[in-house]
Amino acid sequence: MLIELDLNGRDWSVISKNEAILTGFSVYVIELALKLNPLPVSVQRKELADAEAIYQQVRQCLQKGQPQLLELSCEKVEDKKVTVLASEVIGVQLYEKTAATGGSKRPGFSFEA
Image (cartoon, rainbow, N blue to C red):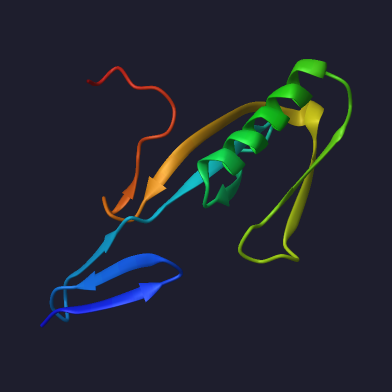
């Protein structure tokens, strides 16, 4: 049984009722590490250029070092927003999350080849 659907320009192929393969779909995650907070704050973007723009915006705030508010919004739910004090951000990373591989590429840096 093979069913193909087009959902927002993405191809979804179902091989059997228990096995599904998602092709051509990935999102980019911008993750902020905050001082004294064990959990990161993250936002997702569908396009790499949009994710890069947010990443560069956060980096510029970090380089200035001045107390400044940084507002990030959700692309999926328009009313969902988060505002952080830029001086409380200690790190930012950008990575790709793909559904085709069943998860995400390992964020950060690794000694493994």
